[in-house]
Length: 385
Image 1 (cartoon, rainbow, N blue to C red):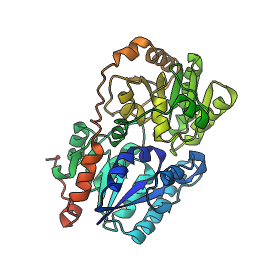
Image 2: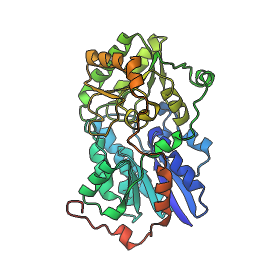
Image 3: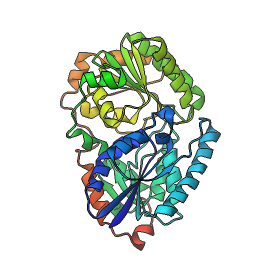
Image 4: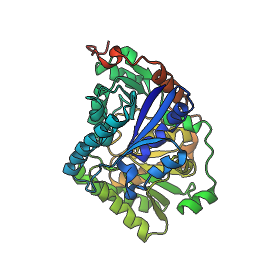
């Protein structure tokens, strides 16, 4: 029996994990345990730990460490609190291997805690670039601290190798989130209306916008430019709550005020992955700078107006329209995105992030790789050989 711990710190990573968790839970030779922390445990982000509880996965530890402030100092202090909290959790429950995902600062805290304890780390979604956010540095730091790497494309695998990781440690798995789309059935319009008070259709925009954390002083202005363009479009909009990044409270305030003053708009703390995908399948376009517009939206042939530099560097499909965070440019891109001709041009679009079988590839390695000195003792290649 191999005990595999999975760290989840936000609704965003949990939705991606789901196919992997389902595959791990189905194994008789695996004891699965979740370490739940960060945004999951805060009411303002939708108290999403309840979604995990409904799914029935065993929660080994709840690690509450996020401060209520969104200043740079508060983020740094939250990382420190997270290292302490995760260190205590891992010492108590002793996983044989730890699975982490992505580039959140909360995830970095878990990884930093695991390294001195000698717990091997498997990292999902390494090798990517997001040039407009501090997440870029955090992602590469997690790569260097991890022992196995499950990447979504060959391009990202090559980058991980160039960071010096040995070839045998790098697996091109594809993006696990796409696995969930293989048998996805959208929620009925009536259910979305009853549960969330939204009725999205082709005259609705999904606005998912997070701070560009390398330019925190411009966050509120960027959010205002997005809102001005959305208002100018004359379309309805569903706004999602931003992640706990530097300056996220400014973004939330701009969109919450808009939703409170205009009946065409709704602000949602957390949809959960099933409802979020259901909205993706119904709206006319997405506007913002979320990775879901880059990774999941191509599978829905959904036009995406990607605003600013947060996602610069990521591989994108033809559904993505890149634009500067300026209202006139955003408005023009929205007009293009909702044009029926543009939508028709996406027929047959192939998602570059995989074939929907990532979880099987990931779980095969997690359950068979020897947990021995070779796994833990990293040997760095010069130039990614």
